[in-house]
Image (tube, rainbow, N blue to C red; front, side):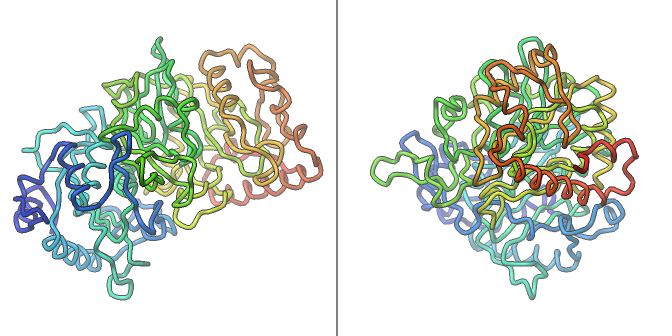
Length: 530
């Protein structure tokens, strides 16, 4: 039943797509042909910039409740089972797999052969089989295209959005499903048009495989300066990973997924998947200029007469996206590889408005906040999220981490110590009050903070201890108002600040209580009760 290269060839030799092309004609098609097919089949339309704009229907973000891992002997004792990594019975997976294969024979498929991982020593060969032409273009733009197609893929991704599961018969939670089988080396996706499920499911696989090689997978963006200094930006969707790593003064390694080996950092992808709600050329010029022919725009409102995108319109979703190859970003690092990090930045969108805009962390504090993964789920990043929600996402990527959190945290702490990495917590969320009262911290302030961290200007100032989080906050940063470095001072209602601070501290402690095996020095590195 394993969907290896020979079986995938057999499967697809029996299917005929709407244009009556042979399987060979539908494998590894160029960008122009995939765009042409998508338009012909009314999967999307061209914008005035030449990008392909698509609408993903009711699924405009990931659907975490519909994500499963097959309960198999190979992984049973290693997976961190629970509400995130939900078990799926093997027999049910085999039955659903057969149904999807029968369905694809009736509608036709496209095939992409590529890899995940810029380091040739640690690449994962993948084959992506899709029902939609634009989904195949997405895979072509987001993964690394070049590989020897005579080598069988190590994992096969099968995307059939037109196939709707029957929860009662198929064992799913809804019509949509994203199921990983590590024994069969198959990722089975159906019922959802949202392309982000393709890239994140492959990332989940790598988060299981790479630690076995003593390589740390990371949900982070990365860039490198002229002197070879490497910065990592951790954070969930909407916290600024893509925006802040796309810096004209530095070279982009990648915007979302990386790994840290004994040789340094390497990109796991070949493309970028940027949020583009509110996108403006003057604020994010590199991302704006990357939207052109070959780029996919998801759920962006387009003027029907001019074809111009309206990035300010959230009427479809806040989670509008642009998918493009990393080479569309000027100043990208073509190799996708760099040395060991000098700086590590945890990006947090604090909806409470309690966290300072920037704080320096000790190694123990870094490990505490990495395990905690505090942030706010922003509107649209997951299905059903329309208002910012405070949440804790372990390792700043819990939905994609199959192993126990301590595995990743111990690896991170050791690498920080081995390479003397400076670590900071940067709040890209609210100041002067919680969401609805305060305001989002200015992007220009955040950019100045990042610059000060990277060029070590921040090290030249004095620091004070934040009374809530017990972290070290600089007293002055160039081009940043000093008053916002003291969160309570910019709240109009100090009593409300104290109330919200206590509430947030309580949530931190309640969340961390589940890490019963965390060493005392890490457990005590969090916020303190007021």
